[in-house]
Length: 270
Ligand SMILES: C[S@@+](CC[C@H](N)C(=O)[O-])C[C@H]1O[C@@H](n2cnc3c(N)ncnc32)[C@H](O)[C@@H]1O
Image 1: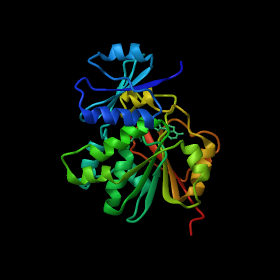
Image 2: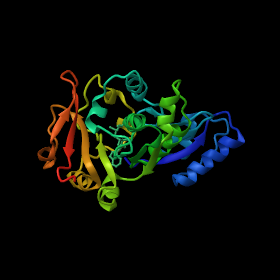
Image 3: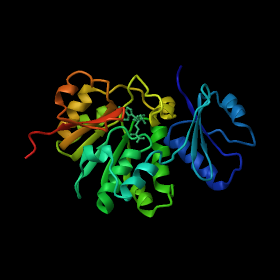
Image 4: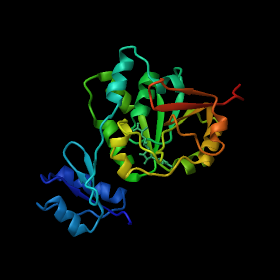
């Protein structure tokens, strides 16, 4: 089925919301359908769109007509994992990327940006963390969420604000990216199998995200772009495709965790 998007507003219309919805409509090249007191099912019917982006007073909400799934920005597991880090606790992702002050990270599969936010927290005020998201509507929801969402902890909120979102497919972006442009390049793609009980298994990202499997060409380019290492998150019992598994130099993950972080170190690093 072809996916089509329309933009509308929350039921309680204000001039600001109307303006935001019109901006989003232009940005995402999708028709704006004025709400005019109608229910969302009525807007779905009137627009004939398969998805609706609703501009509300606090945030944007994305709805899928067929599945009923709903997506909006929230910090996801950054809230719990970030709090552990602030309390001096460990994190497998941060152990794998092993960032030093002043380093930079390119996240090739941004989603909710939870892991980008962990990197930003670890790097502090000078952090340069860039996140790529191929789905324009998800990129826009995350971009606005990262700039406006307020957490109780000021350092956690500040970590969100430092992430730069780029709407791009990582395969194309990496192809044209300069050699050694980032210290670390990170991938967290979808794998065929969902791990039951894992944070990802219940995520609406499964409905709205790009399901493309990890591309060996993209990883090969990432090895050129990463000055120090490429890190890939994947289910521990699934072998990475093609030549990628031969480039893995170490793996991080607890004995109990079903997800691991494979590290592809740049052994030529001077
Ligand atoms: C499993 S989720 C990543 C979750 C993320 N680590 C987080 O903390 O929320 C994968 C995300 O990457 C995006 N994605 C998948 N393939 C991509 C590609 N080729 N280029 C850019 N983004 C991609 C998907 O749309 C989805 O949002």
